Length: 306
Image (cartoon, rainbow, N blue to C red; front, side, top):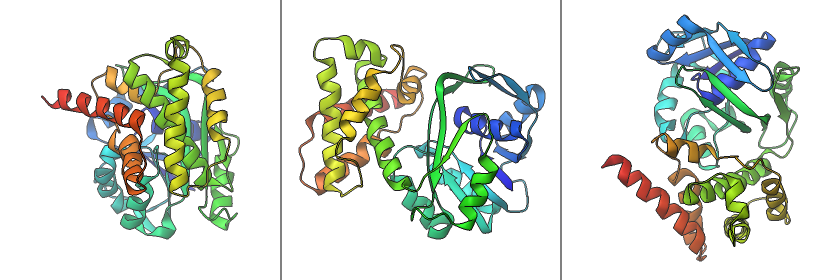
């Protein structure tokens, strides 16, 4: 299976690197600057699951190539349209596109660009970043990819993809309920990113401060109520499950959005919290905590551009 990974950043670099480490046929689609970095230093992964230096095949954006069997897309939502344009030359009749973005709004965008039948469901759980040397630094025990057909079927192509992912030094799991999994992840990341960016703190201090735990739970409940109004297939007890997970997270755990804010990067406010607020307005729901979280993120974006 010929696999193309869009970018060689924190997420794509890690999971694509683990597939390459295993021996899969992996190519990274990168900009010229990142391509030069990979040529000089290799793809360096520093992880609690084992360090590795790899020398991957690369394509510089726009460089011609035959279509690929599978494309992993892990870009940020605000780069999605440019990513679509970059990928079009590498998508053929049989290409499958596996997005690992947070949220759900990107699925329709990808389906409109490439065809509904080409896109499957996916998500990932990982705490990783690129350091100043361009090394992929992965710091938590969790390094999971979940994927599957939206129908839940074990199709020939999803079985083929599952075989390619087996025995990799990262957890790739085939799901028969990927739509539900994506909404559950959406709820979790909306809550975690919301509280950590609002409080400018890791999850530990937020849990411990007076009324902090209650704030986290109320925000999660607000978001879950929006999803239920939209008839998303979430479990009845998903808020309690997510709260248990957050209770067990390490004290210093930060959301990726919080780390992006600390670096002065763009954030996915519109794709995550903003998309849910659109649904809340559609269903006439009041969501005061989510609105505060969103306004905080939009103010951050305003100060970035000023």
